[in-house]
Length: 261
Image (cartoon, rainbow, N blue to C red):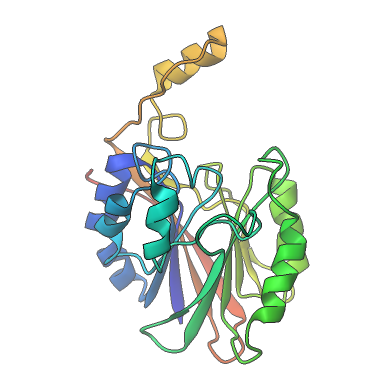
């Protein structure tokens, strides 16, 4: 069984690339289920219900991160979006859910857990390790396929989570930095791992933003709006193969392709 996981989708160009390219990627890699991090889908920061609906027939589950509430009114919209997750280790008083169990059209069910790191991230998040333990204890023992999107800045923290959950989940996949890392592997206990899946954003950009503007901000230290680059879009993703009976991963393959968008 194969599942496609797509890195952070950035802006209108990212949405368009997903709409045009994901059906073919699903066919090419024989993926019956698709998960995507889309916390930057709306103008490069946050989500809206309209943007989510645009890609909902391409992606089965949408995960998020520290920008989940950046767009006005999404805290109300998320209540109606059953396939959208927010980090599970945020306050329980925040709307939405941090994990869910979803039917895989290819067979069986898939649990998807969305977590956010604490190192160099928002201090308001609770311990992601304790949260992961709590969620796993709540899942049915018969549910073997579990994917974790760990949205974090530090590679040490994502590596720690990978080893902490090795043998307990199918995959621990990092998001947030928008840069695909070269460390995709199967850990000793059978868990697929990568520090960061990457992004769906402009190849010649800085994390999907206009190069000149970002460099100017670094040089001057002055606040400024950072326009999203909407052309020359690259799709970063991974395909995780796993045994449906055991939930153990058998392979993880990096994907990084240029699109016509």
